[in-house]
Length: 405
Figure 1 (cartoon, rainbow, N blue to C red):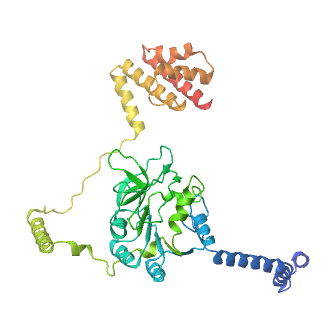
Figure 2: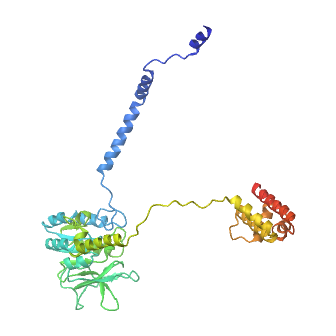
Figure 3: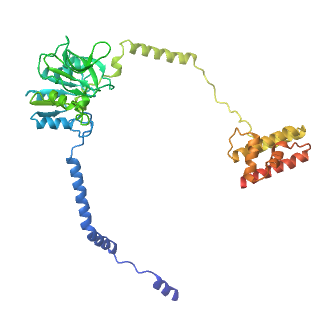
């Protein structure tokens, strides 16, 4: 009875049902205001991130405020009354050109193919090309050819606009004679060339245009960048070239312009017609050859495995051979080499360490005279089996000291 009474007294009283949920609800009511505030702040940040367009960091992008962008010249053109329309797809560009204006085309990644460039040429009137390649020149400015790069060494390039016969251009709108630009970019040759330089053969220029100015190639695209626009007369060239019309369609092709075939062609369709029958014939010949020349294996034959000898037994057997043949020198050489190898490994000297190096390292490690250890490891030569046994025990004791130290 007393035991049962003690058990009843010591047993903890059961917790009332629902106490844990009640505690959780009280804790939630206490922190409810702060939780709602955090959720509202997170939602506001998410909405702001979704509503803010991603920053443009591409070279010569009119929306890029970084040093490599061209936002400064685009904003100045707008302030001067030029309507700057930014497009990044071919359909949007052709639609914008329906209302007239100058096309500024900069395809740094070569997204447009020849068919797309032909459609762009049909829609464009006056066109300005920024550092174009061969395909862009053939489609939009066939009278202008590429001529390499503009050397960056030397003084700024003066305008000095000249035609093919060396005279000034007849049409208006070309760069002023008193302006110079910084060097760099690509070089071109055309009916009208400005900012030219000597190449050792025919002159080339950072600015080339047709005789009537309907197509302009600006090889010095860097003059439009936010970093370079304030140097020399770069701003004058940029504003004079881009601001000749009240309307400028600035077209930079994007990944959306890449043309994809409607049905990707199978690689098998590219093979000649005779490949399939020849492959089937070779397969049949191979199968027949396997049946003809293939080895016909008989039933499996059990073969006993070789005897496995433990390393300890091998060492003991080798020792008995040395003992029977009285080969004290061979046994001593084996013990000496094995001891030196183990000491070198223990002292981290490497596999190629010499015996003298092992002796010196062991002496430093044990703080013992090197002469004593040299006599033990290198100089001692046992003459009897008893001396060999004592010497082997001394070597083992030395190894244990090095290991324990």
